[in-house]
Length: 149
Image 1 (cartoon, rainbow, N blue to C red):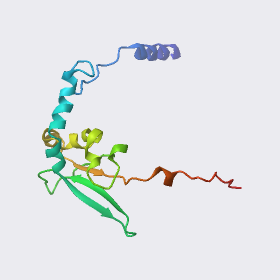
Image 2 (image 1 turned 90 degrees about the vertical axis):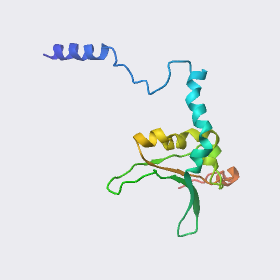
Image 3 (image 1 turned 30 degrees about the horizontal axis):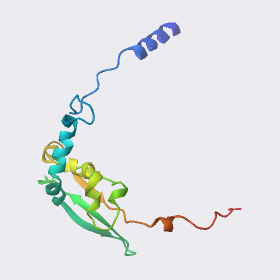
Image 4 (image 1 turned 180 degrees about the vertical axis):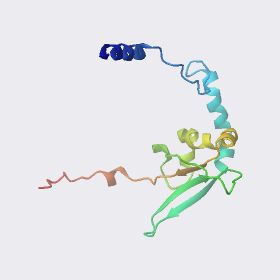
């Protein structure tokens, strides 16, 4: 009986994998014009999409603040719940201008969720906080680590 189970598991492992979904990507080389077209289309809509994100600032009780952008779906049904997509920008999005987290290389991460077609299929709030810049010298300690004994 053990042999039968072993043979069956070997057959399952060696069976061809199921076809992977295409995820809407054209079957072309990664840097081809065909593959870059969706990114270029998103880039061309960037300023309109960024304008749909309300600029806000969170302030805690200590007075510390964090700028963020919030996209709200166009029509909200009171009886429905909506997901919240949180987009954390890369290093180029740091600052206090409440804009860079939606620019440059960060453009694609948050804005793709705000595209009208995506909102029609999957309406969601999109939150894009901005990390304040910290000087590297403030992070690095000039003093050697002390023994904790």
